[in-house]
Amino acid sequence: MSDANRSPFRLDVDLITLRALVAIADTGSFSAAAERIGRTQSAVSLQIAKLEERLQTRLLRRSSRHVSQTPEGELLIGYARRILALADEAATALTAPEAAAPFRVGFADYLAPDHLHALLGRFRQAHPKLVFELRLGTGLMLREALASGALDVAVAGPDGGMGADDGEVLLTEPMVWVAASQGAPQGAPLAEPVPLVLMQPPCSFRRVALEALDRAGLGWRVGTEANAIQAVRSAVQAQLGVSAVARSAAAGMRILGAPLPALPETAMVAYRGPGGHPLTDRFIAFLKDGLAAPGAAALAAE
Image (cartoon, rainbow, N blue to C red; front, side, top):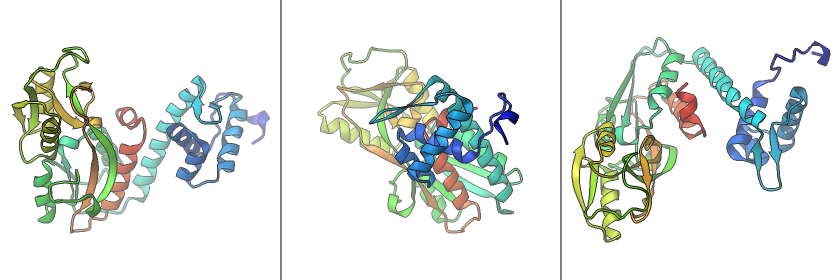
């Protein structure tokens, strides 16, 4: 198409260029973006240069150490994420294998991010005929269900007898201390013993939190025990105590620092069941992309 025939109100761009643009925004460099999408750095640079020329707009600011977005680039990248998500959903729907058997997924409640429902909804929309069953519970419960053949996929932490080497790591993120969004200001003296809101045992987050407090020499008391992450959140927001959660599950709560001790990283791991459901690998890849991509929560919620 000649420049003369191009409408200024039409975005004439291929998906590969949009993927390159989003990858640059996510990684902060052309070289890392090229590696992510399987292209050469020169090819990615040429794609972006052509896109900027076509739009007559600077999308990225380049320096010797970092690449940042212009306001126009930030706007286009937001649209690009939505376009790519829709394109990937269409590809999934068109190439999905037929699956007559229900697809049974278990998710550790304490790891579930706030946008999990939206991610699962997108997968379900791409497979409208699929009978999708979701079970939330503890890692121990999911391990037992997986071993008995009652689940096709279990997403949990690397604990409860299931090591990370036995599954596929979807996301690595820090654990954080959280408190009510309204309460004592950051840095205020900490009440001792520290009032805690924790999941009922056995729970690896509970064990890690108590061990960290013991190492720091801080007294503690478990004031509230819960059997679901939503109950933990409600108790924390009611100012009944502080808790330790995965960073992706901390939305709406206040993250605390010192004098509370630092917490280690945790992992979200997908474990395959013995049955070999035809959608297992596709679902794990979908979750890995949706959970790891920056801005995934905002995108999935749309």
